[in-house]
Length: 254
Picture 1 (cartoon, helix red, strand yellow):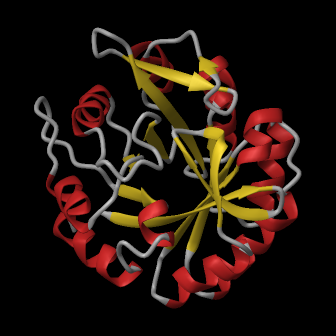
Picture 2: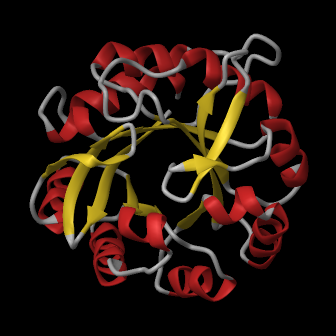
Picture 3: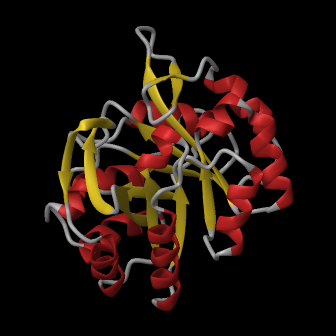
């Protein structure tokens, strides 16, 4: 299982939110300095989100995203980036600039055909973000527009549209766990793993090394599938674990 340290951008700086709530943020300085710290420790991926663009669609942090891509490549690492990518032109610009995987969230949930067209044009370079809450029955409901409202589309519907398409992976975020350090939503993640054959990157809630070990050992009940990666943000930036420790905890999944 691959470790993907998170660098979230707002107003040009690195931040962390709690459950995606823009008024519950902590600031962590220069995102390039943060990324260099992760890369120097051996991180093989960076997970970058332009939170301003996710909410408004305006890519105000694009220069920083591209600088982070350059830093990752200089260190022999890769980068996935998302937030507010809602046109084919915007996606192509990121791909052409060297972003290894572009994550489509709102655009993919509201119009899966858009994600399919992009994936066919850039095979293996387009990921789909499934940022979800669970309703009273436990069903997964994808959210959009910076997580401020439901996407009006069920999980099975969305995944059906992506079936057998050259999508790189799903980045699956449990909104209610994100930034809380309370542990991942293993049941929700298992539900997604059994619903798709696409690689799945888990995000939201990792607070300790045991959380990563549990994710690395997770197998979905129906098909025995495991997550391919784990995004870790707050636990790294707050010093609950080092990159080296986190990578070792991810290792049991290969």
